[in-house]
Image (cartoon, rainbow, N blue to C red; front, top):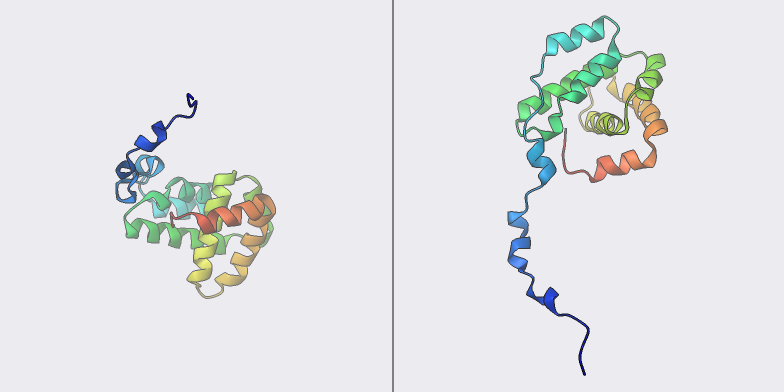
Length: 151
């Protein structure tokens, strides 16, 4: 009796699937930030009332892809300054102009801000969270909590 079932799957080299050898393709593409942090320029945008552009500039740095902790810390401090400087009435408008990936990054900053509260930041972060949740939904929260890349 001839069998039509193949057993070629049994010849798989499991050593090549070793976790120590795993290389994330996306992590290789994003191994360094796309640009240098220009704090003065970003804060200048914010002080002139262009909060959306300032926030997008920080998000474009892709600090979650950096291996340099000082880049992450600088981006976090900038983002906290931008979030706390933004008026509550403007937050919804800013969030509405961000795409899903940017919303997820904002959520990462919000949760990191909750972990490292600064004087008076929690109330502001709750407003940001509410507006980001309205646009990103539960999916945004789940993506942030399950993503291993930190800001």
